[in-house]
Image: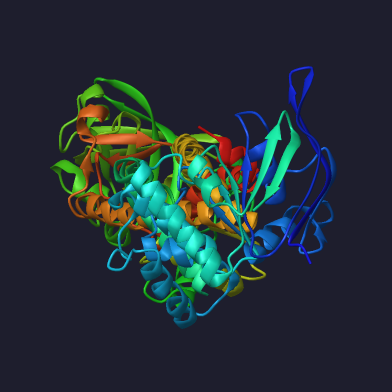
Length: 227
Length: 413
């Protein structure tokens, strides 16, 4: 069974009196264990699609089913619970909570789920080690490099064993070496742990590692290549 | 529990994150509370001094009067058999100083001229225990057993060119006739209040009773308690003891309604001013919290995206204001007590403002040095109100944070 089922998805944005279409009838399915890149030029609808799949925004028409559940039927509180329990997020600008340490950021989702402290620790400490942050657990985001911060974000995204991790331009703010290392880490997590990733990106290095590439142009799927 | 601890920790760190801003906001609240405490302490001290002075000069904490006198001030309306009433009141209020008085108006004449005066007939020995006048004598001495002694105010003495031993004739209305008596000036007092020093005089109570043909009657039997706080209980006790006599038994608030209203209005004015001050401070705090929310829109969007419930985000913002309010309240209490200490021990001298050694309010003479009095329950109310108002100033920004849409927050630059 697919994790995400996108059916005839459309999204329009209002600009004054104008209605600007961002997505026009997108239908896609994403299976467990995937490492998928949504590619396309700026304005093609990548981030819009990612936001709709993540329940961060509401479609104008069409449906998004996550693990069989219709996001539109869930309401804001239901979508919030769905994100907490089934999705992970990695953002371009890392988006760590600046007053929380690396460890506290990584355990944030588990804590919101009510996981006891000992279990959180048992889960998060090895995870931070796995993404290469041993010894940096007590540092605040401001005391970490961009690459390190994005690793914390990856650890935070997968700490709760989500069905799907949505990554919006995760390498855009990193230098090429750090970006490569981060992508290798994410790919390893995909292969070894079976974490499902869906990227919105311009980065050809993501495309090189992806097992499926969906190309968008002007809000439409123009190619869906499986490797 | 862990989530509550996380939110508390985040709130505390968020406050420290903008230390200077938090300090400025907290200081404004703390300063407001400290100012309120000192103002209230000085106000309460001044009011207590006024009440004490007014009660000593013009009445008592509890007074017994003939029915109707409070409204008409008619000298003929007397408490008959004052000695018996004094004994009853003394029995009802052990430890209280009980004094009989006769109030009336008359014309005082000397070789140099005449002046209208307000007169009080007093029991010299009893009155000396409660009155401030013995301590205000500038010439001569307090009344003794002599029936023709009279004490006059310093300005009155100057107007009538009176010295110690000078003869004066006092004329007063006795029922439908005019009666006069000869007195000798025994003492001259100065309260520092023109209305008192220019227009008042005191004579022995027996002389007043004879002049007005009151027999053993008096205008008022006044009981002075150790503290004003026991007035209500004492009034009830005297009312019970004199039930069925047809006499009015009043607490000082009813006996001196002008003084009571002055105190009430003065307090209300002070609190209204402080409320306005606090509302201004709270608007400033609310503005700071709104700024702090708007600066963290992306951060809030991230937390919402990760699954933080909007209600928890509201709680986080409210926790921040609660922590700020708690810290500011503690600091304000400390600063307030520190400022209250000299205000309540040394006091504040308003001599320069008053232009003399005494001030007048609601017809009562007050010393210019006001010694504050901290009323503990009021401090508690101020502290709770300060805390509550600080938290309240975060309610709208917290609601605003909880209504943010994650997708818009994440796109926020």
